[in-house]
Image (cartoon, rainbow, N blue to C red; front, side, top):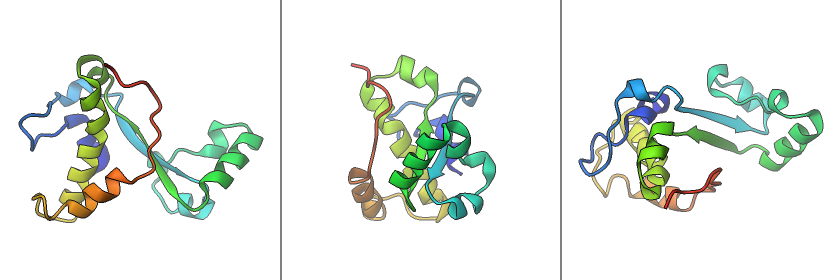
Length: 134
């Protein structure tokens, strides 16, 4: 659901951007974990294989540090980063993750219904892998 939603932006909020999906081919969400059993239970196309992406010593260190937790690697569309402000680029994935969760669990999208999601997002472990545009 999330990989389907990530390219399209926040179609439910009129003040956010909407992008034609044909312009967003480089957009994806994948996960990685330090737990091989957990990774084996997931669809391979959505998993970043740490063992294949890093030299053995680095992969072992990363897997130890990550442990049994699971992290998402989100690549928002390049066109968004090039055309929108930093605030939009940093909110892009949060909005899509929230909307995907709401859609998958058939929740109401009102503020009270998503309060726990908002709280979790504000306190999540986030690592920015690039500079936010001014």
